[in-house]
Amino acid sequence: MATSQYIRISSEDKTASSVSNSDFTVALEDKTATQRIKTIIPIQVFCPNVFYNIRSSYGVVNNVLRVQENGQAAVNVVLPEGYYSSDQIITNLAAAVNALMVGSVLTITLDPITKKYTFTFVGNSVILFDNTAGSSMGDAIGLTTTTADINVHIMDEIPNLNGITAVYIHSQQINPGGFLDGDSGATSAFTWVSLSEVPFGAVGAREIQQQDMNAIVYQGKKNLSLISIVLRDAEGNRLPIGNQRITIIFRVSY
Image (cartoon, rainbow, N blue to C red; front, side):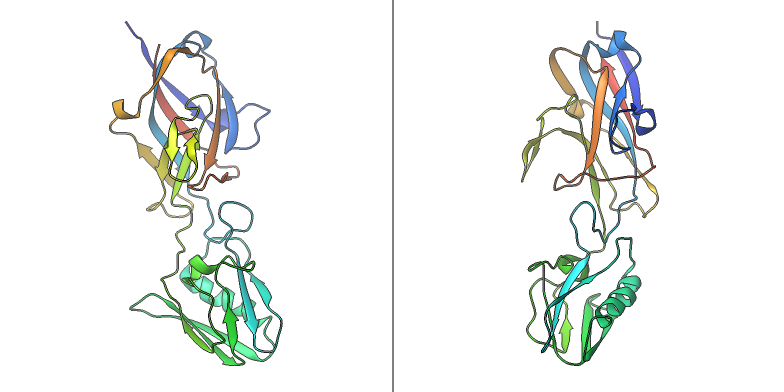
């Protein structure tokens, strides 16, 4: 008869050789149980939402808007990495653009009904580049196509300032190639946690309800005395959590 046991692993218990709190290895102490596991089921996941919605160093980079003022060379407007509200985008992006303009002044407004930005340039007309030619801020501000030479432009879509909405938790030891991704094919993800309704700075929690459907069953006995964990976004990029910690609860049988 199989014996069941709960296992808790956390980045606070990572080995000295671990890279970070989001790319780490845990050495489990109870070798008697963990060297002969038949089934493992993730039960609960706790992950902090500390991911910026304007990023320059990880995930999908989106902090550059390329603009070209009429009669001038194109320039890259760069926002510092951070978590911005819509009002903060309006203030900081307009200031950053205006710092590089020669004969034009930008004002950004948000329509209270459509929730789309309007860019108004007083003076020289300006071209706004979408996610091409080094520009990466298109989705964040709702710009889907490069504009003509314009003085006023209403964005095509509402701004996407949601940040990272889901974190996928990978482990080559737990689930090597067992998670199929539409773009990437087989990956080592074994569970995930949604952050779509978790405020920035708070902790997202997922409790798996249909546990049997999330069970990973091994052929023979699996040695999981060492478990490596990596946090990734939907595109497979590694995600940093700084000095915050992630915790995962498993149920195993052996």
